[in-house]
Length: 245
Ligand SMILES: [Ca+2]
Image (tube, rainbow, N blue to C red):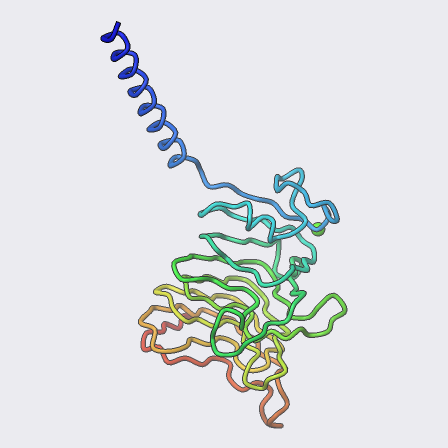
């Protein structure tokens, strides 16, 4: 009887281990998902599928796992609070002219900290943004206080986007993309307009390779100095920038 019980326990352990391994393997093998967002869903929240997209991009970010893609249809997305990219993600709009993302809050503390920025990419995260407009005005067209549109401490790729109306109540801020780290940041075919201070700011002595392959159109900005529409189109200290035609 004792022997039978032992056998049963051993069998149970073996089965448990086998099931655990299978579960772990299937989790590892699960393919990256695509989540869908369309403002046509609003005010219903949606469920993120192609037939029932989310209303809000933030809901898709919350639902996504690392490596997933968020597909954002044409529309205007008035996102609540700071957008934190807390996992590896790609956000892909329908077209930079028709997929428009706007902030409903003001950024606060200055000093290259997280609260300076509308969209934050933490260290260790890879984020790719394409085919969208980031417009720093609210739904009435009034500029919010946006010190940085995107601040990245991870790996950032921005392609085929428009970044505009990035302004603050402080003449030293109003920056499009601020790169504080990364070894292979890429900014390509992205248009900057009405940026108060700096279009792309590669900050500090980051030892990285940054591919800035831009068709940058810069306009607007502060009127502090009559001769200058914008103080810096590009500002960087990195020794390792590559400019591509
Ligand atoms: Ca739509």
